[in-house]
Image 1: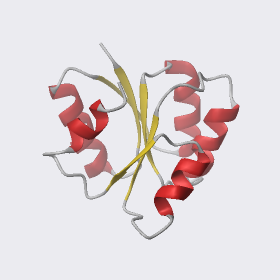
Image 2: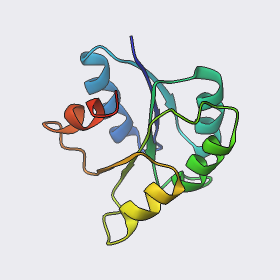
Image 3: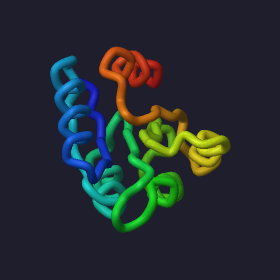
Length: 119
């Protein structure tokens, strides 16, 4: 079973992602802050990380950079999940080490297809 780390501080977004992923056979672990996300990336060794960009303690781009610089496997796909949809935001996420970018609000009809691209 593939394990996905969801780093998301918004309870509704967390619930929606966790529900859809678990319903489709994924194991889900949750981090609610950047610091938790880094610790869980190292401790849980997920197969994929869904990274919110707006977190309370540090932004998801910094969290991604720290995960990439850590002992965590640098090959873990990290997908930015964000309401930032301005010109250049996708490029910033990719430059920070994200492998992909999903815009919020999450579209339940396309979310699993988007996630599935990284396995």
